View 1 (cartoon, rainbow, N blue to C red):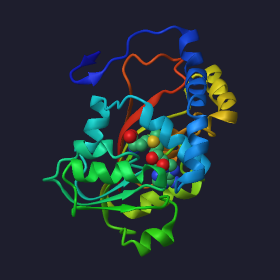
View 2 (view 1 turned 180 degrees about the vertical axis):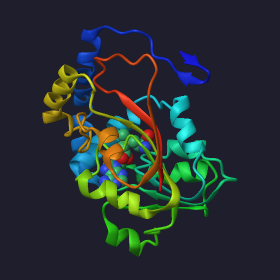
View 3 (view 1 turned 90 degrees about the vertical axis):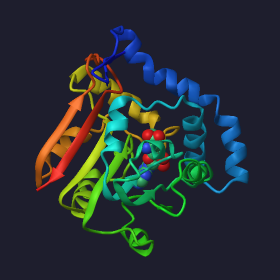
Length: 254
Ligand SMILES: C[S@@+](CC[C@H](N)C(=O)[O-])C[C@H]1O[C@@H](n2cnc3c(N)ncnc32)[C@H](O)[C@@H]1O
């Protein structure tokens, strides 16, 4: 459902919301045998291979909110965790001067590089094979360590190591007036649901490559000093029992 172009979620049951991560976990088991085979024959470790196979099998879902986040990026842009490159179709090429795609999961690089060609970014962007926390490798690959216009992150900040260190590091990369543009799932603002997310986290990170359902990314970013504007919203109609609730918008560096 959509209203003024934005998503409005239909009502759902409490049980349905609580069981959604369990359904994903059961679904992921189907990819275990092929993951074992591809880990033995491919370039990436088990967890990366497992996640890449699951992610590639899920329907590509680019809601209006995600498209806005991407389409508003301009100037020097770093996309954190572009995955299979589905985001590349939504950038406005006239507004982007340079685009760095920082994707540590090598099991996703074939599809990512195919997407670079498919969406006309060949020669206009750079794929960098490391995590956004790897300052040394980023510097070696020429990723700017300051003066960046926009950082784009679509469902990635749940997986970066130690957000207390690496979120401030992201802030430092931005220039004054630069934007961190995000669509992220977050810790529920409902305490029972947040407890359930914490419980799922004991196993969730295995198929989902280090992702934490219970990470309060919106709160961590809001508490970080040095923003002159914090424009984060929830999806309209999202149930308070939603176990994978989202926050989207942008934060502008002071
Ligand atoms: C849920 S997927 C999202 C992919 C893509 N942004 C999209 O929306 O289709 C999370 C992505 O974040 C990447 N990722 C995980 N940890 C990362 C890190 N430390 N630095 C950069 N990317 C990371 C994963 O490899 C994966 O591609």
